[in-house]
Each structure stands twice: as C-alpha cells, then as structure tokens.
Image (cartoon, rainbow, N blue to C red; front, side, top):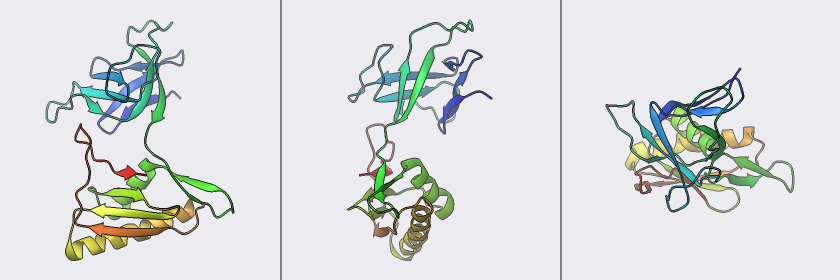
Length: 195
C-alpha cells in the first residue's frame, strides 16, 4: 500500500513511488509553496500554505487556490527516475479546538476537518462558521434565518455535542447565531473554523 496526497479540489495531487517519495502530479496541477503573506518559498523550506492551480478542471477553474496545507518541496531528484517534483506533506495549518476532556485536567483536540464533516454530512449544512468561545462553548454562525435557521442549528447542536462526547470531551455547549455572513479569505474560501 502506498501513500497519496489529495484534496477535494483535486484528488490526485501526489502519489508515492516505490522509493517512498511523494511526487506532485504536475502534468495536471500546479502547487506553489508560500509563506504567511503568500510569497513563494524555495525548495527545502516548509510552507505556511500551498496554492493550487487545477489544470484539468475546465468547468470550474481553480487558480492559486489556498489549500491551507503545509508542504516542503525537497528540490531533489528521486532514485525512481521520475522527473516530477518530490514533496513532504506536513498537514493542515488549521486551528485545532481544545476542549476539556472527560479525564480531569486533560484536553481533547477537535480537528477542523472532522467538525466540518459532522456539520456537512450529518446536518446537511454547507455555509457556516464554528468559533470557539471559552473552554467548552462553540458558536455556530449561519446565514439562514427564521425556522430554517432554528432547525439547522438544532441538528448541528445535537450532532456536534454527540461527536465531542465520542472524542472523550466533557459536554460542550453549541450556541447558534442565525443571519450571519460567513467570513471568507482573500481566495474566497470560507473560514469555517476559527478560534
């Protein structure tokens, strides 16, 4: 079994060769490692984020889309013979929420991707922001109003509380704020989870 690296915006970004290195699928996607101010970085330096340009999607082009992943382009050739660049993937630079654990004095990490998956897949909500407020309170902001908002907030509250308990967290509170615009970054990507 070999590793691969991908994103929902482009699944096959890189794949692992027989020598254990991840090669960027540069025939179909461009990855640009950048610092905090989106300036290009040289090989050998771990990025703050990486920008994706999808060369295969003609219906909805993505040009310099900020993935939020930390990667390092090694700048070295691989013994497998591939001319495609080799990268090391460090992971997301998203904020991780820390909430009190059921074990006294400890914390539980709630990963942003997991929280978003709960809200999207279990509750059918795709435009939202979760923000931690205090040690065990999450605020859910959504643009919906009225009865639709109250129903969505109720579904999300139940699902998020259940998820946190399964992770070993003490019970959390989820407060709803309907009628809120979801903040977006320079790339237009929604800021779904914030501390």
